[in-house]
Length: 290
Image 1 (cartoon, rainbow, N blue to C red):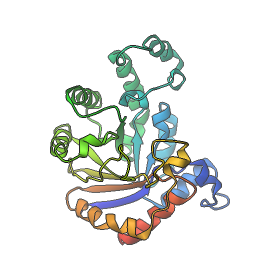
Image 2: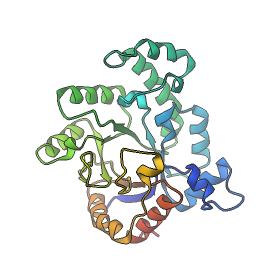
Image 3: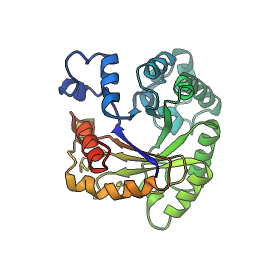
Image 4: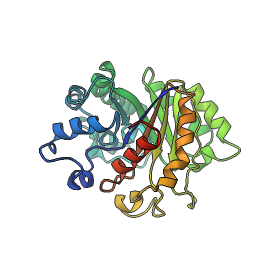
């Protein structure tokens, strides 16, 4: 049976820091991370979606975490086809992005350069054994079809040699009639399929399908079940307190997934106050991990 690791999608969320979960004397950057690692064996880094990571942070994260800890790192927005502000790029690359406004797609040369800087900054995590996977979360507009498949292949080629997990925001990838093809594609690309838990009453709701597409890793992300998904503020979208029954629904599925993958990462993204850490603690208890 594979190892199940439960954690949250951020240990630096402002609401979490302000909410009192971190004890006194451990609320600085180093203290927070060291305390978090005493509670959970995995964390997601979401800041790398909004801006390129730094080698310095990677070195510090590796230094401040115990051997065997895992970081799942979000891919930078430009690499996944999301709108990206020029200010999110290093100053020397901003003019290239500005020149491409209004055009279809981003120049592959710019993407290659962004990838080189992104991956170089994360190298200390990889060499220290702290890197779990890179999480490529694709926008809703990436719908199933040949252009999307070609885009996915280019992304995977760019990230050759790195562990990659793919989360789709368009529900069509995991609906009946297409899910087998989606799983086969991700298997071919040696990419982990990200399973999601979210509200299921919206047209944009992604089905909670679990498919193990790589033997090394399976990943489940819990976004909460708020019907404001896709609208309003971050708090509106992710405010949700998981009930014991909602978590119990997933426990046997997670155990079954661990029979097929060497590691299973379970990450809670309902980051409002301490809701994510409390849900992660409850899930660990349900799975007999604490």
